[in-house]
Length: 382
Ligand SMILES: *Cc1c(COP(=O)(O)O)cnc(C)c1O
Image (tube, rainbow, N blue to C red; front, top):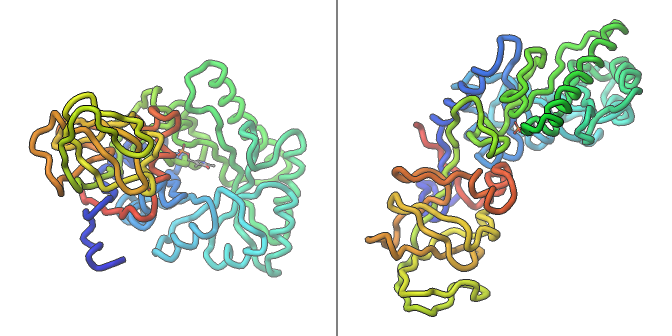
């Protein structure tokens, strides 16, 4: 990072509110019983928020002792930043990386029997890789599925170089209020616990069995899930933007940029690539220092509003790679250097990543995960 970049706030940046994060951890914990431990899902650079900011704060100041990531690189990064809590890799790791799993003391998800055998074979004699077996109960992603699952799981438990500490499954429609989906979610949980019972019958102890994600905790809480894998709600976003949550969360990330130039143009002037927007009257435009290369989606062209001086302004014309234009005709006094909030709060006005997602048919997850590396993450201590 360049020295002049250290102060942040220079072009396009994301403010990460530790106060909001702390609030969300407390609200998430309030949904749990003393039987469920909070597992903080910090994959994908903590959903784009900056794992280097989020994970140490969760461990040191929120008492989090369980983390989940998607892969070995993310797991190793957590260890290198000093995280000492348990780390579960939710996705696939090449069996050839068995030694790194041992070195960093990481718990690995097991996709199927063949993978487990390969991982065990790549592990030195006398060593054991810690793992949780993924069970596919209806997501149809990784995991053992069907009637053979118990036999496979038993074989995996008996492999010489694995230490199976848990089984888990992932819910596919926990964020849906549809009655059929509610039944589906229930059946997913029951399949997991039926398997646990079957393994117990075979004298295999399963220390952890878990299935709750954010939506599971919010809408289908179950004290039997020994771990509660919270992702999106930690960051103050909603699993489903149109299904109210039982707790009040605060978005952790605010995305901001600056005004580079202000200009007044007459009626009939074309703005940006493709001439998709033409002014219908004299218009005051501000050019803003952010674009789709920063992860502000180009699909929002002509749809989104931003905040400036506590007011809403429309994005007009196509969003460019590094810049975009907004209409500030009704907002007096806008000048170069002013701060523009792409999502976040400015005065009484709020734009959320969930709202932007709705405009373009996606989810808030994708908006925050998509904020690109050139946008500096700046922690805000409130
Ligand atoms: C990403 C992920 C989670 C977290 O999901 P949220 O909806 O963000 O709470 C939990 N479990 C698994 C297996 C995941 O992949």
